[in-house]
Amino acid sequence: MKRQPDKKIYLYGRLSHEDELQGDSNSIINQRKILTKYAEENGFTPYEFIYDDGFSGADFERPAFSEMIEEVEAGNVSTVIVKDMSRFGRDYLKVGFYTEILFSEKDVRLIAVNDNVDTGRGENDFTPMMNLFNEWFVKNTSKKIRAVWQAKGKSGERLAVVPPYGYRKDPDNPKQLVIDEESAANVRRIFRLSVEGYGPAQIARLLNDEHILNPSGYKYEHGIVKKARPCKDPYFWNTTTVHKILDAPEYLGLTINFKTWSKSYKDNRPRLNPPEKQLVFEDTHPAIIDLETWDIVRSMRQHKRRAPRYGKSGLFSGVAYCADCGNKLYFHTRSIKNKWGTRYEGSYSCSEYRKDVQYQGKRQCTCHFIRESQLEQLVLEELRDLLRYIPKHEKQFARVVMDRSAQEYKRETAAKKRTAEKHRRRIAELDTLIERLYVDNVSGKITDERYEKMSGKFEAEQEELTNILASLETEIAAEESQAVNVDRFLSVVRRYTEIEELTPAIVHEFIDRIIVHEPEQARGDRRQKVEIIYNNIGAVDRLALKGLGA
Image 1 (cartoon, one colour):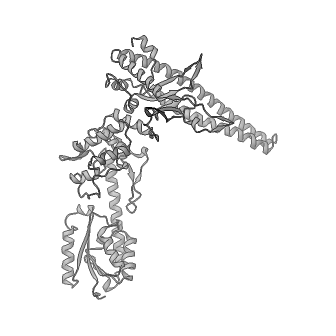
Image 2 (tube, one colour; image 1 turned 90 degrees about the vertical axis):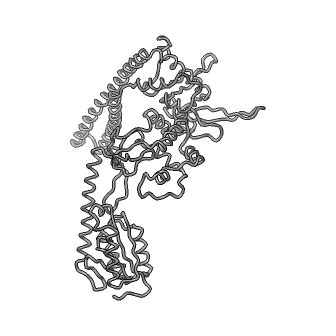
């Protein structure tokens, strides 16, 4: 096969991370030396040396290789020379396609110097065997690497190569993360803005306006990631980036291994692992965010607050619930115009009621209407009462909460256990009834039609009771393992001496949920019961507190 005029000669080299461990024999410099010497001694000039550094032989999406294949498909290449067939690739089927089909169709000569392969001299019967061995090599290497990574991951060693934004690798111990104070300050600020009620989109706009480097831009500019590529706009923050930072448990000092998995060395696309297959290790590096802040952000992100068309977002959106149907209360505003202008008044009502769903000609729930100003005043007064009482009577407060919690636990759990036992007896009774029906059907006492109808009814009831029983058993187990964390609530209280006004951060720091009852009319007066359920301790009896000196 003679060289065709005006067509390119490519000398192609490739080096993977695994090849680097084997010394200099496969280095790009050594490959270039071998290839250029061969080309010049055998008259393959002029030539162009191209290479891919850091790419596996099983990966054919390599920049230089892809560029070469495009030229081959365009009919612009006469010869491709590689050190050996493994440099071309380590996938038996794909290498066969390129070398035996594409190169043959485009009349491209392939030479592998060390393997004595030259399609210009005819086919080499051993080439397919070499390609098969090369694939076996990468498959075997993949197994060994997976085994090493499994061992490292199970021992608690961090598997992620790139440190999270806010950290950098310890120069003295690259396996250990240390806080990068400059970027960590931005992480703390993002969490603080979230606590203050800013959404991810609002935070992203704020960071964009202040022209702050995004995580990719920061890592590139500061050399935190080797071989990092500059991003198109290093100062652009999007909502997804903020989401990832707010959802990253690494900022608590945790290492989470096996977040993703891949099917094989041929299909290494990352797939998310379910939580039960991930491994979590605590205190593996310094925390940037404290647990209290993390919990507040989690609570606020679970209850996303959508801003209304006019006015501000609801202060208690995602926290206020209907006492009767258990659904959330919707926040809405109305405009009130007067000679001084327009003001907006916020209020809450049952979401199920507002859906206007008809059930047997009636709404499923009632309005449970309450003005935000009334709810805000009530919550603020109760929080101020707690702040006045608790600093002086911490021990008495803890005792009241613990005693009440123990009594409620005994009462509620005992009721659930009684219900569970009742369901168990009924399920066993249904088993007996179904068995008797079967016997009666076989003996001819009841018809097949009657048997199908009655047994179907009993089995449906049994299935429903079994599902209810499973839920009850789960609730009982959770309650028996749960302890009231008074200390965590007290640590929140100690951070405040006075609350002048409520903010979303304060609401979510103190309160788990607010239960609003339907108003009642008594002698012309409108009365409405509101229950405040606090984080970690549940409801607080204000009368009991006042009796102890509040």
